[in-house]
Length: 68
Image (cartoon, rainbow, N blue to C red):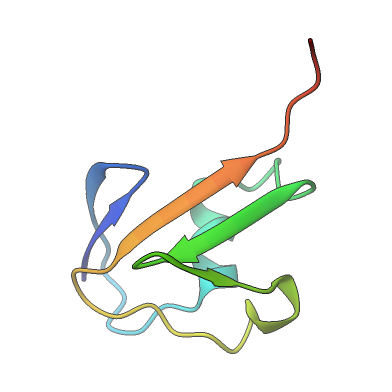
């Protein structure tokens, strides 16, 4: 499966991949304060385990940071 994750082309062996599985692989230590959008549609955190990412999807993962 080919995806664009934060503007980087990625290749995965899995044929199907949920948002949660993708985050577990790409950001295993940083899942607090995270927002995910697939093809410009924000996916609520409660739907991550059940939302499948389609081939060639554009995935944007945003993490909150502190500072001023």
